[in-house]
Image (cartoon, rainbow, N blue to C red; front, top):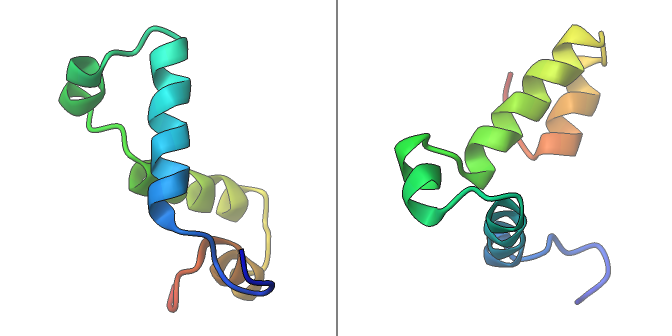
Length: 67
């Protein structure tokens, strides 16, 4: 990995799907419940807002370009 370069989303997505499988959430259930890295990204965004993290910091952490 190159320093200061975002990691490939596919690497994170595969890790998420592996972790879900390890806790018993099958691919079929994952798809039925629409569980994806993107949905977790929005969940994190919501948690940070509730914790009163400044919007600029949230955008930096989540990679969103706008609020």
